[in-house]
Every structure is written in structure tokens, then in C-alpha cells.
Length: 237
Picture 1 (cartoon, rainbow, N blue to C red):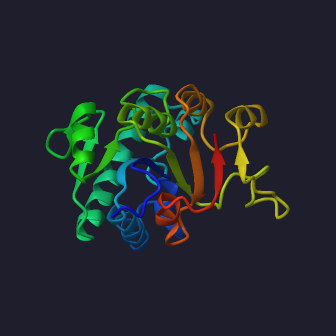
Picture 2 (picture 1 turned 135 degrees about the vertical axis):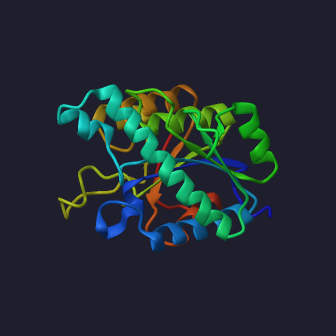
């Protein structure tokens, strides 16, 4: 205990990252490793809330672009995040980490309804709280859900764990000369159109003075390094 630089964080996990090289579904080896990394950070004394995406199972925006009703496709995406949340809960509890899943869409058999004060109480008792189903509203991404939940629970920072090392000036998967930023302001992210989070989420973080730390989820130990305050990834503040 006491080795963490932060009392409480909101960890935003990419759904796509859980798929691994298979590109879809849940790679059990990856989710086990992620759970171990979260367990290490939790043992360091950090209170951890988690928002998880659903892009490895279903992407509402992509389905909407294909002609599906946007609200219906977004609700389907919310249900995909619930599947990921239950998988992560199982993996975390196998690592000995007490967890609760809270869903923005009521489904009493598998998750608690999202109640802010109850979520904070769970965190204070040392439980990891996984927030499922986004905000519960269509037209909002899980990035916005992460910014909203972080503000509601009083998190000191949003840690966005993705498939790349940080925020680049262009897509590093397509451009070998892409340059990674060490630090940015919210306005720079918005003006440059950088794809760290959607503009609604970035604006919400800016209004609430919530720093965003982006780093690579695929590098084992990065979550612990981030909670210790070590210099990794890109910081937006």
C-alpha cells in the first residue's frame, strides 16, 4: 500500500485491445494478463474504476454507417460492453480482486444498476468497479462515459489504455515516421483533431480539469507504472 501516486483513477480500456490479433471477440490470454496488471495496481493502494469499450464485439457507429438505426446500433454496442465487463470481472476475481459491475442499463441478474454514491462506497471499500453500458444513452461513446464517470466518482486522472504507446501526430500503424507527443493541452488535441478520445469526452475533461493519460495496454506492467506516476505514454492536461 502507499506506492501509488493516485488515490483514485478511472481506467478506460479499449474493447478492441481485448481481441488481440484475432481482431474480434475476447482473447482469454490477453484478458488474464490485463487482469493481472490491474491487480498489481490495485495492490499498490489505488482505487480503480473501469469503463470498458465493446468494439471487439460490436461497433454501433460502424453499424449505423452501414444503414442501421443509430439508436438501435448504439444500444447493441452498450450490450457488448456488458459482455466485456463480465469477462473482466471473472478474470479479476480469479486474481483475488473484489469487483462490482454497475450497468447504466438495468439488468439485475448480472449487474448492479449504476448508482454514484454506491460506486464510491465500493471504491472506498477496496473493490474495483466496472462501469458497463456506457452512459446508457445512444449517441455517446464509451470515451464520453469514461469522462462522465471519472468526474462523478472524483477520479484524479483518466488512464486510457489502448493498442499504441501514446498519442501520435498521425496513425503509427500506417506511417512509420509518426511522432509521439509527450504532453498536450486539451485545446491542442481538439484543434489538431487527434484521435485520443472524441471531442465531447475531451471537452468534458477540460471543463472538469481531468488529466488524460494514454498508454499501451499491450505492454505488461504499464498500468502499475501509470499509477505510480512514472513517465509513460502521452499526458493531456
